[in-house]
Length: 302
Image 1 (cartoon, one colour):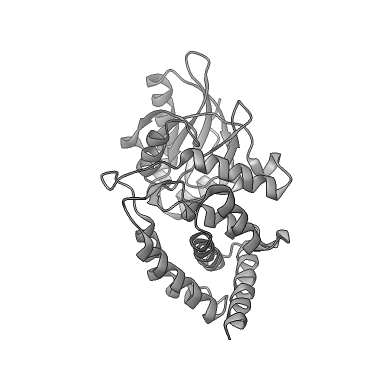
Image 2: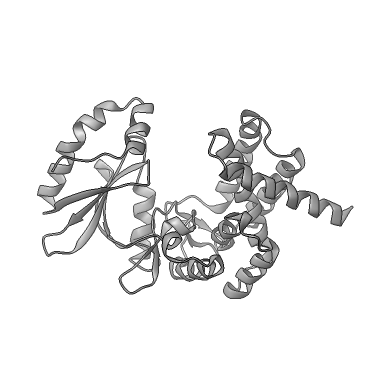
């Protein structure tokens, strides 16, 4: 069957000037199918940084073949999946990092499509994250939460200007202060393996009904870095984000202040970045909530 390349993948590759990769892709897939004894199935839509194909292994096991687009290094993802070994994340079945290819356990539909209640989603995301978290030392080649906070702090002011100052200066200042505190709070001795992009579309249903995470960014960081993404996500749901933070802290034993500060970091940086690339209404939704929370916080301390 002809190789289907989703429009988003094709657009990413062509925007980056890598059209020749598209021409070479059918031969690469054929080669992998031969070497790993795979039957190639349909393409999966949704992403833009990798071609993802349903495949079947020689023993009948359903799997997923993931091929990173040029410039997309899947090595960090492979490191996370190797360390997790199927706990909390999709199981890594094989890899060819020279060709930016991963063979992964095939999972079901995303949590976003299967679980209607947002509060229940938060519980399930916590459960998946806790299964993934494990001590990981500085000998493991993954960036730290401190490095992420520093990177965000370096990029945020410029992104904010490029995006046309889509939120208040006070909101940016608040996020920068949180980034500095989380950078200073990092401790290699207590760092764990975290996913780095924990949300309902990155959690897929496993065969036992639980949920496993996919597309890990991968960090050595405090667990609050992951939980802060849950506080960032879906600010228009109508619940109180501070109450949501307290519930996450109670469920996991993670410090509520750290969760809140990472939530602020993810909310503001993601909102400004999304605004800079025109990803709406997500950006406006996040930043409206960020501005509201900043005003609320400053009025309490005035």
